[in-house]
Amino acid sequence: MHYNKIRKMDISNGPGVRVSIFMQGCVFHCKNCFNPETHDFAGGKEFTENTIKKVLELANKDYIVGLSILGGEPMHPKNREGTFQLAKAFKEKFPNKTIWVWSGYLFDEDLISEKNLKYIDVLIDGRYQEELRNPTLKYCGSENQRVIDVSKSLKKKKIVLLEQKEKVLQMV
Image 1 (cartoon, rainbow, N blue to C red):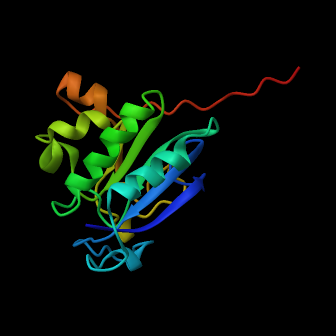
Image 2 (cartoon, rainbow, N blue to C red):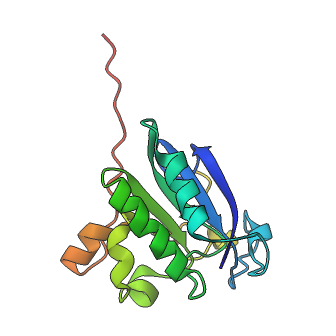
């Protein structure tokens, strides 16, 4: 398994300041993908225990609120084991920080049987579809994608979308 890059302070892939890792390899090749350099499974750098240690070190700061795992395709069968190893290690070290994962695979069709989903807080699922592109969406690129609250979905055995509450500023 390989990864493409790690961002130590990312503010565009999930709420707050996060560490992000972009896994290497994707079979979907969505039209106008924002990360085509991550498609080749042989590209990038080798994903090892040291990669996990590096991510944990970068996240060990008070201002880091979570980890974002993107791609490429972190939930491709070639990448799942490493993705879940990272998610498990992250949750064990930082139980109060969130893990967000982006995947072209669908939660209720392709991923629901994965016992390791318990380590993921939010899953943005569905392939990017250029014809459904909507730049006003928060955390998604196209209208078919869903921002799923994984723990609530697993408990209720149905998809529960994340409630995204906007902060209302009161002027005094």
